[in-house]
Every structure is written in structure tokens, then in C-alpha cells.
Amino acid sequence: MQKLLAVVLGGIADHAVDGLGRRTPLQVAKTPNLDHLAMLGGCGVFHPTFIGEPVTPEYSLYVMLGNPPELFPGRAAFEAIARDVSLEEGKVYFLIEPAFVDDGVLVEVRTFESDEEEELFYQFLCEHIAEVKRLDRGLYLSTSSEYVCCTHPGVAGGAVADYVPLSELAKLPERWPGNAKRTDKGLQPINRLLFFGCGRYVGPPKSKFPLDWIFYTDSTFFYGLIKWMGMECFFSQSREIRVWLSEAFTKAFKELRSRDGVFVYTDYIHRFGIRTRAWKRVEVIEEMDEAFSAVLDAVVKEDIMVMVASDVTVPSVGYKPYSGLPVPVMMMGEGVRRGASAKFDEALAPTGSLGILRGRELMLTLFSYMGYYSHTSS
Image (cartoon, rainbow, N blue to C red):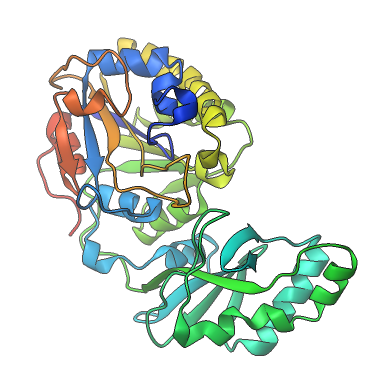
């Protein structure tokens, strides 16, 4: 059975951008290593549900790994599990993020001046919300008796949705005494709570992931997802994506001596707000590509299959955080049907030999090429 190195580069897929000559950042970026891998293998596109339906990164990865859609517990659960917060079966959890909203439009989130100010705000929330827990600075977990609709637009400039059942809770920060000091300093007040990531918590599927894999990530929610699945995950973060990927690949090749596969996921572009800056995304993609030189060297020497994909399509322009367009995916290894792709990007990938892969089809295709014939967890 072939061993697998699977890499998901979150946020590299985009729409065409006028400022880039009506091309995407991935098309513009110089990616000789990714392109070489694509030339040696086959390309296609992936979408976790139906093409055109926008989904979040956490849902895309959840489905990509073969988990049943009906059990999806929501991002709130993954964020909590990543921080070792205990959750109750059947209970609804959602995330809360404080923000400044002007005339129904999101201006800024987590605008605290200091840790001390955020602590005072958190204590204010604890006094007015029965069950609330801090997960991170400016990120809180709460519960509800019913599903809470998302009001978070995801990007600054987006319209904040109204959710009538919790409208009073959403406006709670307007009563926070700390806003008086912020106004005196010429700062914007914190005047809204945004809700997102809601889900009803359920334990992981009874059937486990069938192969011995280890996961590497810089993403908190993905770390929680893998812990939820009961698998081993290494978590670390860095402000230099090329360095982080290079270190992850070095560890991956060592692990592949004794394991069936290694899965690497980065949400660097999502975390650092690069998705709204097309030229910056070009630079980041090129830095990512530099790290793949080690992958090319390894596959020449060893019998390793490589898969590279993105999680969701993220438009650089506009006020929607995610798009329903599929993301490019490539596979390279023994038995993989080679295509005609000379570059790894959104425009050429659909013409490749892999075709359109939906939901669990991506993982099942990987298993087929690896030489393992089984279903993913269900």
C-alpha cells in the first residue's frame, strides 16, 4: 500500500480579480513546485456538498475526512475541544465574538485595547449570560436551548444579520460601562455580539478512521476536529508560513516511516486576514510553494503519494467570506492517471483526470490509489 502525504492549503482558491488581470492569486503566483507535482499527476476539483453552495472551512474538512454530514457538531464544539473544554451530549453550543457595528455593517471585531480591558468585558458577560466561557481573547462559548442562527458576516464591511430570538443578547455590549472610557479615548465602542459556529454536540462516529494517520496543523478548529475524531494531531503556529510548512514536511517524512499517512492543514490565510488582499495572497502562495521543494525531493526517492488541495473558495473581493465554487485538488503517485495540467490552479484543475470529487469521494479516491479499499468513517 502506498503511503500518503495529504496537504490542504486553506484559502488559496479565489475568484478572478480585476486587479490581477481577471486571474486568481493562484493563477498569478509563481508555483514551480506545485506545478511540477501537478504535471506528474492528475488534477480535479473538490466540493463537500453541491457546487455553488457556500460552506465553511470546518465543514469542508469535516466532510473531506469522511465524517457523516448529519453528525456535524459545529465549529463551536471544535474550538472548545481544542482547548480541552468538556461538552455535554445533545447540547447546543455557539460562538460569540464582540464587535463594533455601524448602521448594520461590521466595522471591526475584538477591538480590545489590552488584556485587562478584555477581562473586564468578559466579567460583564459572565454577569449577564448564564453560561459563557472564554475560549480565547474576544472569543466566547455559550449554549442555547435551540439552534442559534449565524449573524457574523465573516468579513469587515459585511452586513450583520439580525436574529430576533437573541436580539437583546446581541445588543448587550451597548450597556457595558467600559465603552465610556473607550469613547473618551476616541475609540469605537463595542456595541454588538456576533454569533456563529452553532451546532448540537454529538460524540464522534463509532467507526474510526481506518488507517494509521497523524495530523499537523496551525488551525485551532482543525485541531479540535481531529481530537473529536479521536486521532493524533500536532498543533503549532508560526507567523512565517514557509518555515511552518517546511517543519511540518520534515516531521511528516519521519512519521511516514511507520505510519500510513500524514495530513497537513494550514489556515494561515484565514487567520491573518490575507483573504481580502489579493496581492498579499499571491505572495503567501509563493512562500507556500517554496516549502514544496522538499516534497518533490522526497517523492523522487520514496514511494509516497501526494495530495494537495484547498478547503473552500475565498473571494478576495466582496463581502462574502466563502464562495460555493469548488477548489482545485491534485494527486500524484503510482497509479494516478496523469492529466494535461501544466499548472496547479482553479482554471486548469477542472480539465484534469480526477474530475469532480464531492463529499467523501475525495477520501475514497485517495484510498483507491493508495491500495486500501474500504469506506471512510460513517
